[in-house]
Each structure stands twice: as C-alpha cells, then as structure tokens.
Length: 362
Ligand SMILES: O=C(O)CCC(=O)C(=O)O
Ligand SMILES: [Fe+2]
Image 1 (cartoon, protein in one colour):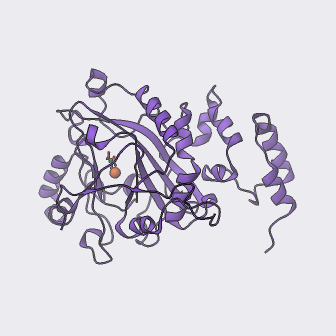
Image 2 (cartoon, rainbow, N blue to C red):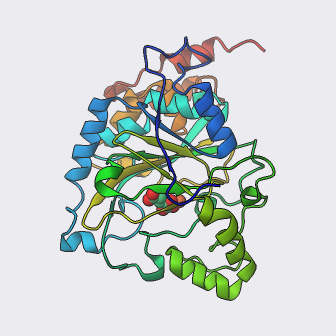
Image 3 (spheres, protein in one colour):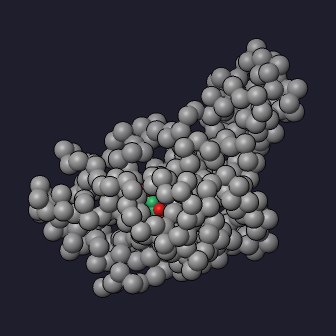
C-alpha cells in the first residue's frame, strides 16, 4: 500500500514524428499504456503534449498577469481560478492556443474514444496558486485541500459508471514541483473491487447535506463530528493511499470527474502556475461550462474571440460548439449569414458548404 510520500513521474507522450498514422480524425498523442492508465486508475501524468515554445509563452503571460509570490497582493489570493484574468478566451493568445491545441484535443479524444468533433470544451483557466504560512481562506482555503472528486461543481448529475466516462479533466503545470511544491495528490484506482471507488462516489463534503469545506483539517474535523463513518472511510481508504504528481513545466495530469485527488501546500513564498481544462462528450449536456459562454467574449473590443473562431480549424470550432459540416443548422441562408459575419475575418466556410451540396451517404 502506498504512503503519502509516494510520487508518480510523468511519461513522455508520443512525439509528433513518432505518432502513428492518423487514426480517425487525428494523430495519436498518448501511448496505449497511458490511455489504459487513465481508464483504469483514473489519471495519467504525461510530458511532451505541448510544444516548448508555446509553454514558454504561456509562462510569460502568467508571470505578467499574477502578483509575485511573497507580496501583499499574493496574500489575498486563496481560491481556485484566475477570476477571469486568464480564462479562455483570453487576451493572451498562448492560453487559447493551449486550450485548442490539436495534440491535446487528440489526446482527449483517445481517452474518451471519441472523434475530436464530438468533444466540447467546458473549462479552461490559467491560474496561480501561492505558498504561505497562514490560511487566509479559513475552512475554504485551498492550500491543503480535503480529498475530493471534482464532479459536484462540474455536472448536474453524477458521473456515469466507471467504464463509460463522459469527460476528461486536465491540469497543465507551468511550474516545477521541485521549485514550488504543491503536488496534486491522487488515489489510484486499483480495480472494480477497490473500496475507495465503490459507487456512488459520495463520501465527501459538498455532497448530499454535507457542507462544502475545502481545507483538509477543517473538513475532516467536521466529518468526524457529523458523519463519522465517512471520516473513517476517508482515513482508511483515501489519505493513506495518495500518491503525488512530480510535475515539471509542461506536464499534463489527465484525470476525471470521479478521480479522488486534492491540492497540497506549496512551499512557503512560492507560486505555481497551472492551466485547468475540461472537455466533455457532446451529448453530456449536464456537464456545465464553468466560465462565461464563449460568445460573451464577442462583446470585447479586441475581437479576440471572433478572430479565433474565424481562423480555427473545423475540429476546433466543433469543440467550442460551432455546428460542424453536415449539421442541420446549415442551409444556404445560414451559410450566407455566417459568411457575412465572419468572412471578413477570414473564415472559410467551404467545408460546410460542401457538406450541404454533397451530404454523406446513409
Ligand atoms: O491545485 C491542485 O493541485 C488541485 C486543485 C484541485 O483539485 C481543485 O481545486 O479542485
Ligand atoms: Fe479538484
């Protein structure tokens, strides 16, 4: 059995050159072992998904967007997310390019067994986390988190049975754990009879009538008081089995809405950048978009979202919910209208027009 000092190290993704010939809509990014690790144990840590030059630009955007560690401004930041600063679609192009990078879309497609056109983005946010002595957030502080799964604030339902996953969550780390600490801790699922993963996944604060508490010691104290059997389950099956992600700049933790995990404290006075993203299957409408809808950004004077959509690939547009070629939305009239809106920005509607003229047989 693992102890809390066990680490998992990243494995390399298939290189662009080494990836096998296109399978379905795209090249493979993850090896079979990585796909099966995600499917069986609930997570996999992978390096080399994104190009280094893009990662560097994202690190620069983050460094210029968030307070330095050990400053009074950093002291007040104690919760998840960037509060809109580097949410998709961001004014910083690197954030958007990471979100819709063909290699990450292909990797997610592999994990879900879906075509990229059937994926939908529901979250993408580059944020900063800080290491500090105090816990300014009290029982909502996020530095030493209680063990949890993420589904309660992503889906209106409960994740389906284990082998029918409908979403992939990921954390792209833009810092090095050796510099900043703050490794994400995870409980690897060992099989269908793993007591930690008995269905439903409900032994945590924020589910049923259990109050949502983020901080580990506050959460476990409340559970010992209100639901001692749940506290016992967590002390027996979760915390003793956690392993920690030994991330570097560019490591990607692919995990799931039903994977037990938690954030652990950063080194005091340090800062960690990470970008969280979530993709769901197109049919799973009960998984919510966690940010403002993408079209809302089309109010901005920068025109960042309009330009992004106009110049995106057909697959990338589908991931944002834009109707794909052959979708019943498309008629000669809608084609002309969308061309009027985005044509001046460079949108090429040929694939949609072609599918209308020449619908696939069957
Ligand atoms: O910060 C981390 O490493 C994990 C954060 C997390 O799990 C969460 O906020 O839900
Ligand atoms: Fe989480």
